[in-house]
Structure formats: C-alpha cells, structure tokens
Image: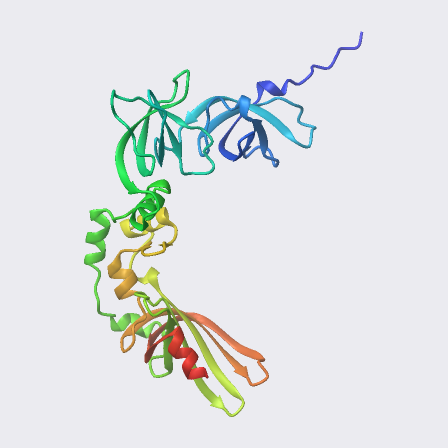
Amino acid sequence: MKKKKKKHNNQEKTFTGIVDHVKKRFCFISVDEITEDIKIKSRNMKSAIHGDKVLVTLLNNFSYKNFEGEIIKILERSKSEYIGKIQDNGDFAFFIPDNKKIYNDFFIKKKKKIRYDENLKVLVKVNNWNSRRKPEAEIIKVIGKSGENETEISSIIHDYNLPTAFPNVVENEAANLKNEIPNDEIKKRKDLRNITTFTIDPEDAKDFDDALSIKINNKNSFSIGIHIADVSHFFTTKSEINKEAEKRATSTYLVDRTIPMLPERLSNNLCSLKPNTDRLTFSVIFDINKEARINNIWIGKTIIHSDKRFTYENAQHAID
C-alpha cells in the first residue's frame, strides 16, 4: 500500500522581522529566510506599528511568488515615545503622530475642563499598548508651536532619535588626544606639504574634511592629489569614540545645525584640513594631461599643508 506524502503546513513555520508599514492597508516584513518580503494586511497586524520587531507566520504556500502572512506576536516595540499633535474631541482626545508611516492614533485620557491646543507639537509616551480601544499615551513634553523652526527641528531630532550630545566618556577620550604629529608618523607617510593644496567648502562650513592639490610636471602634465582627513589615526576600533561613531553612522545635516558623527575636537579641529596647518590624510594622487588622460595612480597615507581655504563663491570667482 502506497503511503500518502505528508503535506507540509507552512503555518507551522514562523519568522522574525521588522515592520515596514508602507500603506494604511498593509505592511511588509523582511525576513532572512525568504528572498521576497511577506505582505501583511492591516487586519492581520495585531496592533503592530512601523519599526516593531514581530513574529510572523505564512498564510499561503511557499511556492507562491507573493507571500502573505499574519503577525502572531509583537516581540519588541521600536519605541515608546512619539512626536505629533493632539486632536481634542471634548470629553476625550487623540494623539496623531507626525511620522507618516504610523497609521495608528493613540488615546489620550483627559482631565475635566482641560482643552488641548491643537496647534502645539507634543511628545507623548505610550503606557498601555494592550488597550481594547487604541494604545493609550500621556503627554510628557510640549515641544512648541507647530510650524516654528525650533519646534520642527526639535521634532525631527526626537522622531529619529538623533543624539544631541556625546557621552562624557567619549568627550573625555577626545579631550586627551594630542595635537602634535609625531616624527615617526610623518616618516611613514608621503610628505606633500610643499605642494600647492587648498580646500573648497561652503561659506558657513566649520569642518574641512577634503582637499585638492596640484603640481605642474611639464607643459602637458599635472599631478593632482585628492585628500581626505585620516580620522582613523586618532583612535582604534575598540575606543569609545569609534563605538559612538558606529552608532551614529554619519553626521546628520539639518536646516540650521549639524549633529556630528565625531566629537568637535576631532571634526572641527584635529581632522579638519585647516589652512596653514599640517594634517594627516589618505590620498589619491595621479598624473593627468591636457587631453584628460590619467596615469601613474598612487593611493596611500600622506601629510599635507593646506595653503588656502576657498569658499564656493571665491573659487568660482577665481575660475571666472
């Protein structure tokens, strides 16, 4: 007697992933085990919101091109604090998040006679995700009047969890870095300090992290150098500075301020290619002729000395 093959039940298989809530009607979950994202309709999201870490099971067969599933458990909330506005409905109020990927609104308990100003941006904290109605939140801070510059910038900083200060241990480590470049370090590098070098940056730039140099070889050939600050010279991968830099990943440029990846002592001082100052760099140096043909490419560690700091405007003026 021929045995029947056991049918594989895909619903028994679960996956872990992060919610990407692309539209109100559905979200996608990206998981390591499947190349295609799993689509979850809103009715199967179990109150999960954008960024949450969730446990998912499939509703259709592995052979299907488009996977559909449902969230069976929320493993970790991405955050508990949100920026947005209050919608006051008299006896009760709702919080409407600024983040366009969060389609839930939160219930705000009201005390008698309180009337919320709907033009204010506020920071709320969710204190009950399991409410039968909606997640319940409380106002913990008034950010400011909606539309004002400081309010909107503060909202962005809060909403994206951007760090506004460096930990003390990082600042202390940066403060102990030495200004002087040891002779032993200079001997390890190609010395370009006698070659014409300059930076070109916006008028309001505070850090200059790249530079250009030029040397005339003959009537038809020039040696061009492209230099970037050698940040790695000042700290190791195990340092607190590096750990914090990895968390930040990059400097963040907002309309009226910069949230740097590195402490100011590094970004605006030791690693800034200021004029009339020796600086350690990584460089690409190549020869180029008047027909724009490149040869003799060299890449390595260097030391440079910038002769001038150009702004975009005065560099263009010089070219003109």
